[in-house]
Image (cartoon, rainbow, N blue to C red; front, side, top):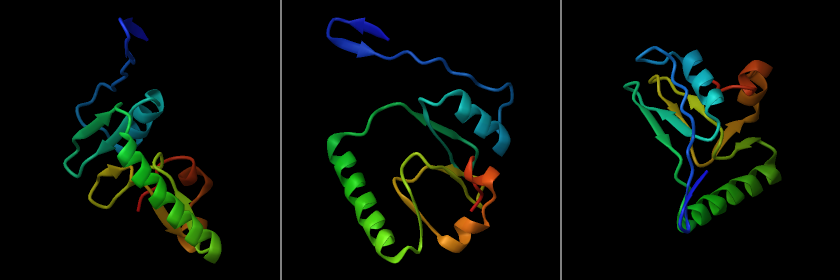
Length: 122
């Protein structure tokens, strides 16, 4: 961390594989090599990387949404609630990290242990 006066600037190393387009496996490796970054890939293969924290209003809204879904799920035991660090590969080749996600219990149980320890395809 660098400190300039009272302003703190975080310097993070960025590890990029040697290919211009990441396969799903390369994207997972990139994310694991850079755990402090929030990484998403759009349907065109473009990476979106952020290290900016969420402002309080957005964070408050996200926590309310997560709490509502978690409370509903706790009552019905219908699936698994995933918070904002869980990522998913989608059919359009994108990889997204939603603020909150819910997975039906049948779909959750169908995932392998390896898929649960990575970014599953949905």
